[in-house]
Amino acid sequence: MFGLFRKKPLANPFVQQDDPQTFRVRVRTRPHGEVVELRFTKSAHIGMDDAGAYLFRKVVVSPQHFDRGELTVRFGPRYDVTATEGQNLDFVPVSEWT
Image (cartoon, rainbow, N blue to C red; front, side, top):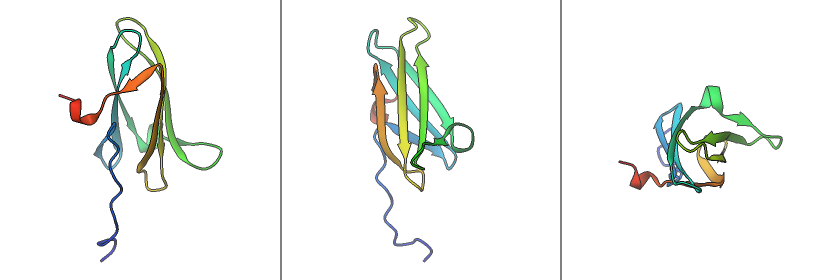
């Protein structure tokens, strides 16, 4: 009953939720195509913006070529992913992870 018939939000193709507190995302840098995986949690890494929405923002530096980029993952009030944005990065879909 308690949420039994509530629609579950559609999963984002780029962000995987490992458990109720932890998320993972993989990005590919544009200059050299290096893949970097990031793991982040609700309590330690996700904050609020000025409008009151939840977001995770991180500067990414690839380990081999030191390519720089920035990613932003936006969340709704129930921590469902609403948008992903990347500068100098491309998101790797979860379906391509091995």
